[in-house]
Image (cartoon, rainbow over all chains, first blue to last red; front, side):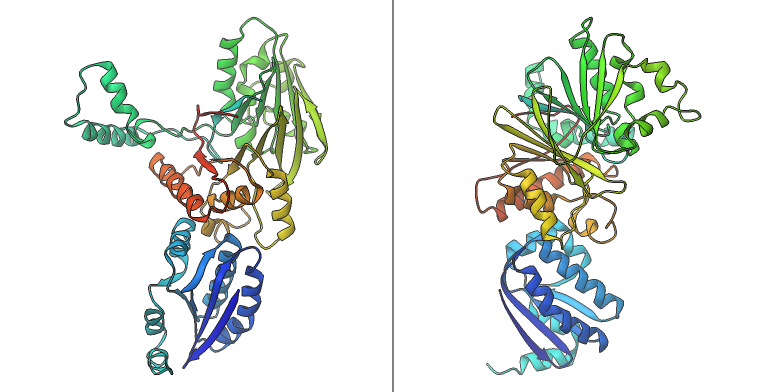
Length: 126
Length: 319
């Protein structure tokens, strides 16, 4: 699984790609741990850009639940953006769409994060 | 092993369809009947058969009790929830007058799984034998205690006169009972619970209720995948949504439809039957969960299809 990270003003965007299952969830958790700690310490925002994720299992959803809990406790923002249709169905069936902030696009998620993040994302190099 | 019949499928405590719930079903059925031809009983039966199960039927309300049809002379059951009472009545009718032996495998000793025993009429009849199998050290104590004053008016020995006996099973050891090879496995639940794997004549049945699955423990997952391996049917506690099971209801000792599908897919099981339904769910909610679970199986399938069903009181599944 590939995991890319970008910083847009006060918001960190983490973009995993591929399947998040019992084989790869630990890698996502390891990648997220320092980023979550930093975002929580700064009470800033972290967006998970799921445009490249084509499957997520219960083990992967657990990683998101822990992340959401950590960010909530720090009064920091966490959202998940741009779900593919299969992943959106898994979120709905597991009721994760009720416990996580899910945005239809990365742009929407950044707009909810901060004006500065949205402006930085729009100004990114092509 | 020919199949199973569910006598109790509700989790935590028995529930009944209320007058309000029945009224709602009748209203929806009559609405669906508008313009239909219902002149004969055959027309009515045909019309009813075309309705969703949540409208024309009910998932029922007895707590856990599952009968295994071994094809042999003895009765085999899992758990003694309130569903044991209607099972007992049916058994009395089926083989009246002949001494019978009942083998009952206990997942654990919480009330919803033991409350049927004081009302199990076959155990009142001289000549019958009831053998209760389990891995809890407190098995006999728990069943005697529920019939002590002030909780119950008739004592264990008074009512059963020695016809009920207890057999301790060591987890992980395969035992031969009533023509079945039976292996139990420790599960995560308050006070412990045990799942059972039954094998006979090339068929495999797994009964795994009141079992929570810690998702961060790969060794735990692998243990269950092996326990479910190539099962023809896995009867699985899918009481909560995954989000609830790992957040507000974490450590409550139950599982979800999502984990049930994943474990069965990893194990190459052929059929998943969800049970231990949340008592606050009405028939429509259980039916919606069933439809979602079938959809989940479809969109995550990588091998042979996994058949998914939701247990109801009276459901029979052939193996």
